Image (cartoon, rainbow, N blue to C red; front, side, top):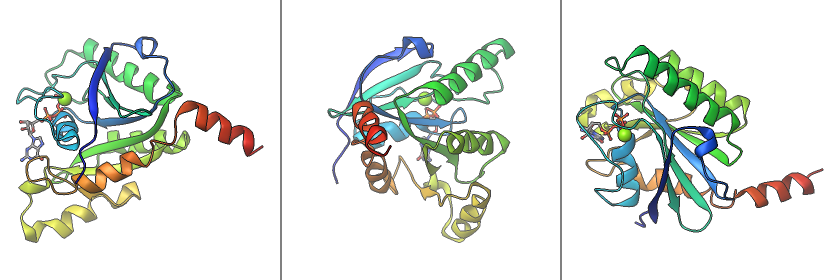
Length: 203
Ligand SMILES: Nc1nc2c(ncn2[C@@H]2O[C@H](COP(=O)(O)OP(=O)(O)OP(=O)(O)O)[C@@H](O)[C@H]2O)c(=O)[nH]1
Ligand SMILES: [Mg+2]
């Protein structure tokens, strides 16, 4: 097992506030409280890297973490938090859309969905956004430790509408974390110059 060498870089409130670097970015997106920050900490094997909380809606900025020399992870704000003001929810949704649609460095999205709940229209929308941009879509079914053995097959079936096999994962017992790491690390070669080069070469 090799933890991701992740270090906090900066928080951005808008796409414009994101850094100009050549790193490929992999974004963690999902409903508030789904376990994005916990998963990031598990991927990096560090408890205190990203702030986690029992109070939903804690992450309201795009938090960027460098991973090694050519990759970065973006912890996006959670959507769908009921107690957030409508104004704030609209603002966060617009910022997320802007980042997901326009961020040139973005190579892949890890879409986190509670394994007990499965995808809703919000996740299906995010998935189709990823497909439109030709981003790699990785689906992480979170909090798998809360599933009984007898519930696992039915839980996985709920993900069928996404047309991507989910990785059952748990930040608590480590299930699926290594598989997710490998899927994320597969993008370390996607840095902007490399992507530009491959685009030029394929012409
Ligand atoms: N049982 C279990 N609980 C988890 C797991 N991952 C996260 N949690 C719990 O779920 C709650 C939310 O976790 P966070 O990691 O803060 O979730 P988040 O998606 O970053 O939340 P926001 O930043 O508010 O959008 C916390 O109470 C965590 O302890 C998991 O794998 N298993
Ligand atoms: Mg968070």
